[in-house]
Image (cartoon, rainbow, N blue to C red; front, side):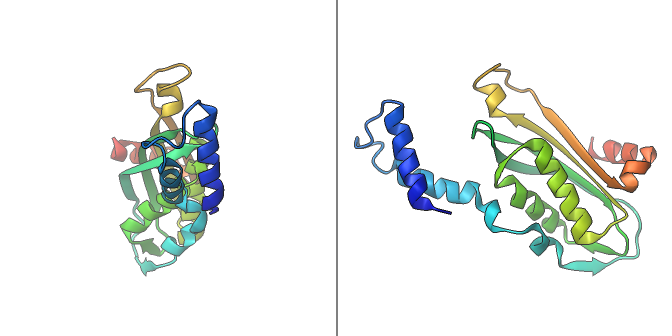
Length: 183
């Protein structure tokens, strides 16, 4: 990440909206924004497979569900936050992963300039690649600040996306069971 470019861009933005970047309250703002970007966009520095590579042998073929994984991301269209919950279900095929690793996988992709639809697919594909389960399903429910604080201004509106892979694509009953489990 190029922190100097971010500092310069933040200063130009402040000047562009008519602010005095030398006034007391703003003097350190470009530096604060650069540090914030380092945190909010840290997903570019990480690979999801790092978290999904440590697995455990398991003879169960029953669905594993982790729900209500809180996430925060930034919309690539307006650079405004969107946030919500991710629900992940998978049917193991001989191996499982520690539950925190699913949440860490979500963070890898959420900490990038992102689209919710893309985030949903990236998480599903990463779990399929990393665990080779019989199937995976990912559902994300999120509120987008680009709809809340600008544009149409509709706070509380939720966007729901899901991606199904493997047995979840083929089995309506399995998808329904997942949906029942996350409600």
